[in-house]
Image 1 (cartoon, helix red, strand yellow):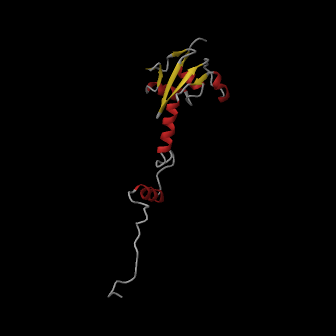
Image 2: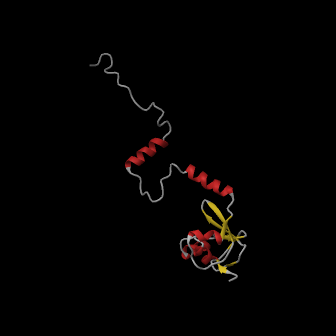
Image 3: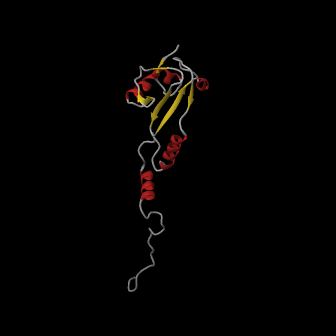
Length: 143
C-alpha cells in the first residue's frame, strides 16, 4: 500500500470521529497539504504533512505510515506525528483564558440567576461598593 485516501486515513488515525465528518472537513476547505486545499479523494503517501483547521487553530500532522483501518488510540503515534507549532497552542490557550465569560457549549440557556450574575459582573461600576443606599431615619421635621 503506497497511497491511501486522505479521508480514510484521517478517520483511521482518529483525527475525525467518522469518515463523513472527515469528508465534510475537506469540502469546507479545512484540510490542506502544502497550503493547498484538498478533496476527500486525494491520495496521500508517507512523509506528507497535513494541516487540519479546527477553529481557532490549525493542527499539523506528519504521515509516518498508511492505514485504512481504524485503530486504538495507543497505536496512533506509530502512524502520525503531531507537528503543530507551539504558537498555535498559544492561540488555543488564549482562547480558553479569554472565554471565561462565555458559557460552556451544551449548557443551554442561562437561568435568571445566571443572567443577573452575568449582568452584575459585566456592568460598569458593578461591584465597586457604591451601589447601596443608606437610611439615616426620618429627615428633620419628618416623623
